[in-house]
Image (cartoon, rainbow, N blue to C red):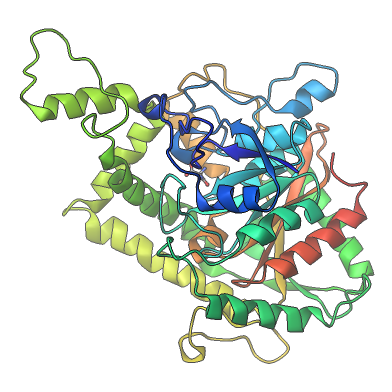
Amino acid sequence: MSIAVKDNICTKYYPTTCSSRMLKDCESPFDATVVSLLSDNGAGIMGKANCDEFGMGSLNVHSVHGPVINPFGLRKGQAELRSAGGSSGGSAAAVAAGLCDAALGTDTGGSVRLPASYCGVVGLKPSYGIVSRWGVVSFADSLDCVGVLARDVSTVRRVHNPIATYDARDPTAASPKIRGRAAQMCADRLEAFKDGDYTGLRIGIPQEYFPSELQTSVVDSLKRVLDKLQARGATLVPISLPSTQYALSAYYVISSAEASSNLARYDGIEYGFRASLPPGTDMTKTANVYAETRSQGFGKEVQRRILLGAYALSADAFENYFLKAQRVRNLIKADFDRVFSLPNALRSASSQTAPPDGQGVDVIIHPSAIQTAPPLPDNTADSSSDLSSLDAYVQDVLTVPASLAGLPALSVPAGQGSDGWPIGVSIVGQWGAEEMVLRVGEAIEKCHAGPL
Ligand code: GLN
């Protein structure tokens, strides 16, 4: 099987640039654990995939290699330049264009699911801690996950399963005991659904996932999917996840705070790019080397996150921003635990409020994105106006809650919008219930002709 690897995952035989000038000539001396595991299982790594710089972006336009063009526009016989989504846009585009069988991406707040949706392919963000992050260049450690993109759910499963193993080198890896417990609970529940009969499957539809920005055709596609699942015996359950409204703000505070700390290492002294300073600069002042290197080495979006994150962590703002965002994160986790029938294997029974017997849901289904792939911005080099970054941030509004809660989420193609472009729907499950979301994803896949 041929696999493309997002360029923020270390590979020995290809450069690892993170799409940044800072690491443009970086060669890793080792493979990330996920890459070694795939090679050991007979996969061929066919190349590195473009991405937003250090994984920061929703449209894959913030890259030293240039933007990623969504291959769907070219396939239709016309050159319509739309975004492939970000930040794993190169991975999704490589799969959609048939350049590889599958691709690895990373998903911190939606970067596998959003490009999967825009490009009409399947994308899995696993539960946090299930797939090793060793050798993956950090953006926001408490959120980063390595995910898989492919043209169908069964290929995603074939790539995900061998990389979903415990790795002692990743300090945030879930222990074999906890992952075993979660997998067992999931398998026990799946016993109830055999041979395509989904009688008794309870699907939660969260009322907060239908913001005003949602395109009508996206809602129509979702309805068609739900009708078909209902016809196969599933029950639709309206649910509420009340803290969803705060998720996007909390995500950008937490992820930027972690990014500002992680990216402090790129200072022009130890490794990576070093700016040559203008003649006459005092070279004995390391501050000059730092400032010049970081100003030239990082793109505008990365600089914006570093500033936002450093501010959120500063003494004046810590309480009001960082701590508040962490509290919101806990509320979001509790929202999910209150609706899932399976308990969260990461927490003790006494620390979670389970739904009343028989009232919980097996999965949650919602649109993956608020719209089909947006056009590539005119000036893709580094669009820095506030409006365009805010627009880009809003693309993640439906994907960030599962990231903050560390839950598995799968985006599968669900037809086309009124503009003829792909639409995706997402299935979210309890922590460790990957097989549940994959099975429901397969059921949805069967409702449609398949990938676009
Ligand atoms: N678009 C989000 C961001 O820019 C998510 C990125 C990601 O998942 N890597 O932070």
